[in-house]
Amino acid sequence: MKKNVGFTYTLPLTIWLTIFFAVPIMIIFVGSFLKKSTYGGFEAQFSLDAYISLLNPGVRKVILKTLFIAIVSTIITILMAIPTAYYIARSKYKNMFLLLIIIPFWTNFLIRVFAWMTILGNNGLINNMLLSIGFISKPLQLLNNQWAVILLMIYTYLPFAILPLYTTIEKFDFGLLEAARDLGATKFQAFYKILIPGIIPGITTAVLFTFIPVFGNFAIPDIVGGKDSVMIGNLINSQLKVVKNYPFASSLSVTLTLVTTIAVFMFMQITKLKRDRIHDKNKVVEDSKRFMKMSKV
Image (spheres, one colour):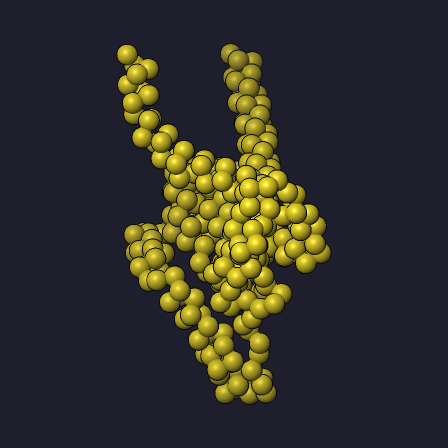
């Protein structure tokens, strides 16, 4: 009876995941092994042409560029999110700060990106300010390069990293930091050796919430990026809308999924090893304390 009730509760979710997740992935996977139709789309004929095209030096360059932008954006985002989330969690104005973090979501994504274009453009706020004080003689090229893409990626996904980190840090026992300071640890040592290991679940979630959407993003590179900022998402978009090469776009999507899955799996394994190591150290400390108490008795 209990099994039937559990099956009934999970059936809607199972149907949803099957129709909107498993089936589309299977269609993309199968389509990547088909031949391109003359007028676009798929032709029901087995072919490895789409995967052979991945060996093209230009495609390899795009994949490596995508990895570089995704990794750099994720690292900088996490490095900014941790102290920000820590400050919010310790502040008495946390509700106000959380509201400020959420407010950008009330504005359309494209509007926010175009707002940055008015800041970074040749006639934008930064260039006009530097020109007016005589710091530069001609406008700086702040747009149409990979660093503009990385900046916009960080700006876009920073809230997604701050929120899970804040949730984890808020539950952290800050008395441990004070104890570490009392035992002679510096602020940095207490932060790095006590706080960071204690919020690994939040860091893991923040990394996943940042890396995965950045790796598949195509809107930001398309708007503020240049020729050296083309990412896999842009390549997939052009193959679907312009070239109409659906098998090649499918093979790129499969590659995108595999690379993301492997990267996420490796990161989760690393964090699991660190978590286990920290658990073993804590166990040794507890056993030592227990042994000392028994010896005193």
